[in-house]
Image 1 (cartoon, rainbow, N blue to C red):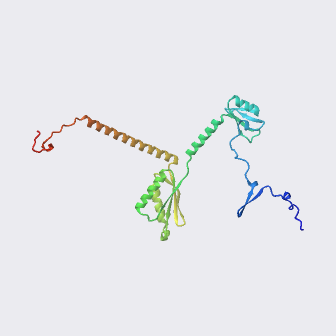
Image 2: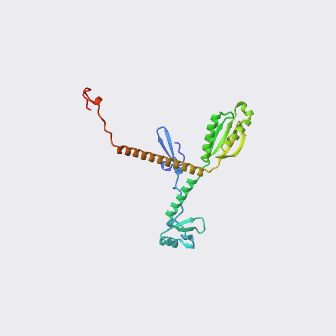
Image 3: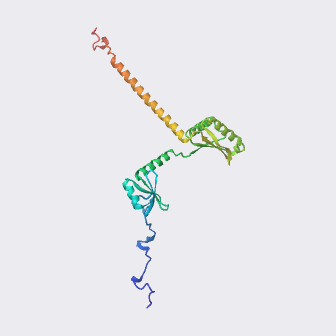
Length: 272
């Protein structure tokens, strides 16, 4: 009788890796790798406050920014409780760490307000693109120019692309002259930020707005508010005029109507 290899003769001696389990379901095999499961939770980026500060002493800063000095953590927490404030660790990498007495809830609220205001005032540079042909029709040119003016008035940059095809590539002066004409027509709203240059079959030019995006937005909002105020004023004037007409009509006496032969049922009877 052939002996089994050592470690396989009994079920109690069979050892499997502790991090791999095997389960058979139908025709497949599911491998569960337990040691790959993530451990730990979310790493907080907020500063440690009050009892979360695990050091023996801190360099304490008062509520008004005054330097108190190096004190024990127990004394710092006692001062925070007496002042009804929070002890916030503002420089954890310092030796010893720097902690400040402050109202942490108010501090977080003010920081959130500042971040929201900065995002509101942040301007994103947007580059619009307008494509033209060297032999563009005059009506198409006016339409394209109107779009360029609208983009520049909104505070956006505009990249003008002249597309050459076929034999048009042998006459780049057509595109150059067209770009110069367009820049001259819209000089009230923008300037040439990048001079015309050849790029393969195309010729490019970039126009920059004269006004910043924030100023353009403010002007657009002011114009929108002005138009809304005018519409409200016109509607109020129209309602007032209609009310005056109804009042005048109600004040006039109703004229009595005389009946004649045509109003009688019998034409032979005269009611006069």
